[in-house]
Length: 81
Image 1 (tube, rainbow, N blue to C red):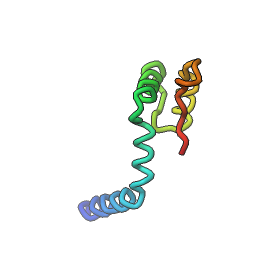
Image 2 (cartoon, one colour; image 1 turned 90 degrees about the vertical axis):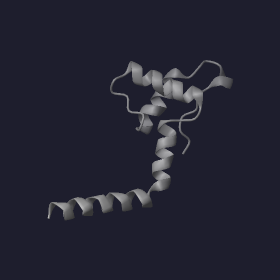
Image 3 (cartoon, rainbow, N blue to C red; image 1 turned 45 degrees about the vertical axis):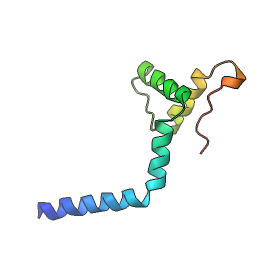
Image 4 (tube, helix red, strand yellow; image 1 turned 180 degrees about the vertical axis):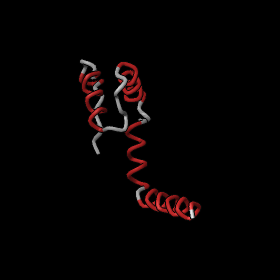
């Protein structure tokens, strides 16, 4: 009986994952950006604040805003999605 429940849960998780691939990929891309500046900013925020959650869009936006350089040409823009 336990095997059936575990199997059903695994199938459900798989189906949810497959139907939300785009959302999951977008979240991953925003939490672990390819941009060196954004990646370093998130790393600095995580090191400075133990409760920082890079999966949380609000935490990322606050981090980018706090660490934004003073030069307009070098600004780090938060998630635009």
